[in-house]
Image 1 (spheres, protein in one colour):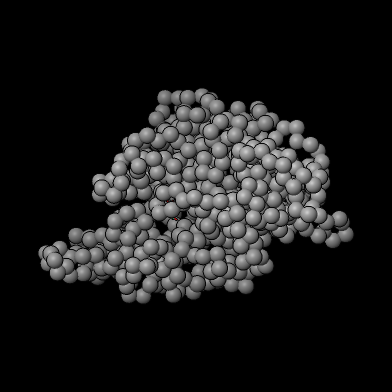
Image 2 (cartoon, rainbow, N blue to C red):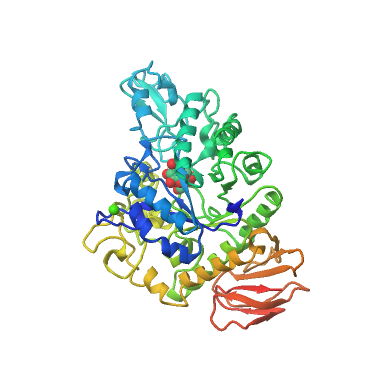
Length: 565
Ligand code: TEU
Ligand code: CA
């Protein structure tokens, strides 16, 4: 169960490194930077989709599961990358996007061609509903909304029926109730596993079992359709079958994107007695500050601590957790949860957040660029965005007069997915060394790259990058950070997050670590709870922190410390 001890790094290939000057990141670009990742200390790479795709949703719409996206290179490039990863004793998990395909996938091209095509039943086709108000125009078969705005149904002219797409119009949902679909998916999984990949991150995997008869959602259910969509009657049956027929035959790691699943329900998918998945992503923490769509919701530190404390209870014994606060669908870590108001506070708070991620219970995931403290992009206008989610929402919300243009841009700047998709900042050369100086990157480089880039940070012992290297090394050096008990020392404290990780090591003295995080700008004299004494300092993000702790700690703005105790 190597995945329990892993530190995972997510690569969004389009934005990592362009090796051939076309402005789009590619596989050879990833291979170029494997020594960087090795030095960072991560030992598993999660690669966002690299398959042949027309890129309606940047590769989350797959046209051919057995081909590499031509912009990203060739199968030979993939094989070379995989071999180079293994040569460095790292592992690779790839994105498995099988709730839906591209509408350009051969299965869908067949499926839409006629009502009696053998592939018709690979997708969900339904007649429209009669429309009493306008008999000439039918209504969609039910009231499902799409994640990317509008109805989840699209009328297809050739056969005059609607098909289901929970995401974009170009992402039709596969019908997993058809055993042939399952067989075909299992076979493409084996194709990649036989090549030597070490597992999968499974995109929106709980959505694979649809509700029988596809009834309308009630007004209550419409507030959070994922809850209904993720809890179809055959979800576990299909995942068990996948495990039995594919996963159990390999030594792999699986992590499901648990959209629509509550923490309490997670053990159904990941309890070690279940034989479905190893891990899931739970979104309670990363979405703690999110209201409807891209609106901001107030949150407090005790709320966040309560989430992690609850995780430790629910997933305590036989389920394993994941820890992450960013990915390609969320804002930049430091912009979202830290403080970017000054360069000093950006560096300090980015280090604090990494400290928390590397010491909480569960396998940590680092999203590319967060190890540099990269920030959100200063979006000012719609044409700076590339993401289909933003573009579709603009039509619905601004053109539909639900909000003003200025409000929409402000919210998208704050929470839009393109914030985390801007190119990696490698150097202070034009285009941040992501691509050649004269190329036009597919998405603009953040203008702060002369300040924030890997080369500069590598040379600066006080950088976020060097600190993150130390943290990851510490995580690997002490099994207490992997298997240790977790205890929140002071759940109600509004400003300080203090917790311990302790592990009994047979025949040796126990490993006992205490993590103290000052979440905010305000300095504080923090008195540890009665009976707790901070011992030797192990790591700190403020230069000159005293080497021993005591019972009261003078914490500076965004101070983060790890002690023994
Ligand atoms: O994301 C699913 C998902 O949770 C999104 O609806 C997400 O909540 C939203 O976009 C955030 O604003 C997965 C992938 O991670 C995402 O990149 C894909 O666009 C989506 O599935 C469809 O494959
Ligand atoms: Ca390229």
